[in-house]
Length: 152
Image 1 (cartoon, rainbow, N blue to C red):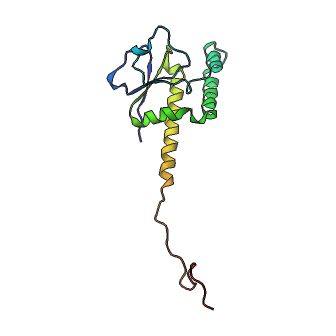
Image 2: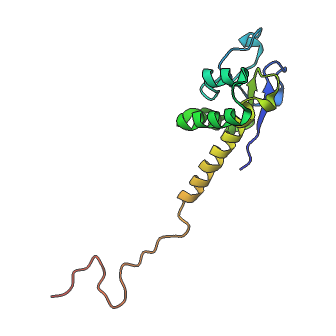
């Protein structure tokens, strides 16, 4: 199944076709009032930890290290993606951040992790259905049926 997850800056005006609008930053964006953002939710649990975010912004770590550590954080908090996955299954999901450059922020990593988790969940749901009807034969022609007692 295809999922529509788009990325936007929180400072861009809301659009009718945004679907569910979720702010995924730890910090509230400067100068923005909640009622002007048309948010569905402010979900901090899927954003990078304060320490990781600080290291990235202070350029103590590279983008590759940031990506690996952020993915580890998401893997450690197994259920952190579930609310976003539910929203993505309902229709378009718009992930919002105050970052100036969205492509160098955590949002593309989060979108990729969401799409992977949705794909895995879809695959597992498909695999749980039996591939063929079960065989109801209870015995071989030469043997007594399993639920019958042998004659004595």
